Length: 186
Image (cartoon, rainbow, N blue to C red; front, side, top):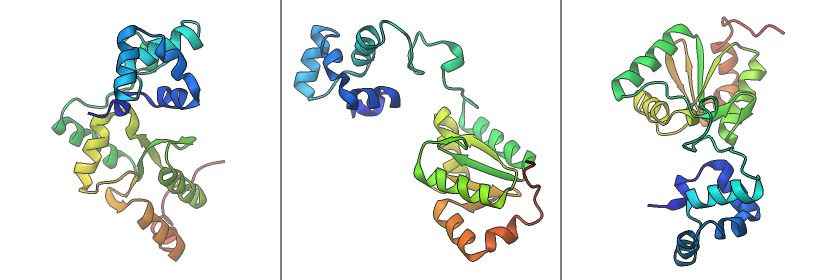
């Protein structure tokens, strides 16, 4: 399995910014692994980074000793539970966006573009960050039978992802679809 996929995003960014030297001092085993695999052992790199670069300050959300407030929240535990959560979300909200990140800080360009289109429409919507819950991320893909994120639902119906939203926005269809939906109050 690819070791880099096990690292948190902040750790990957830190490693790309030259923290590899700190990771090499983590332990002889980590240094040997780094030499053999041409990379950095994720846990050892995180520990070394925290010790050497941050002076022992904790800071990675996925760490075992991380504060509860910073750990990812799981929306549901199993397949059926996730489907029930998604169904409830769609029943309770007229416009729903499942995205990577939050509207104030999207974590991918496609999610950012959809947020901008919805902002242009000035429509109220509820956003759900699929990066905070692997179960939600997988569950929404199964729910819609659509393989990518972001996903937009209007009145409980799956509209599509970024490309479809872009076409609807450019053609004026999105404006018509959202004409009778509550607008954001300034």
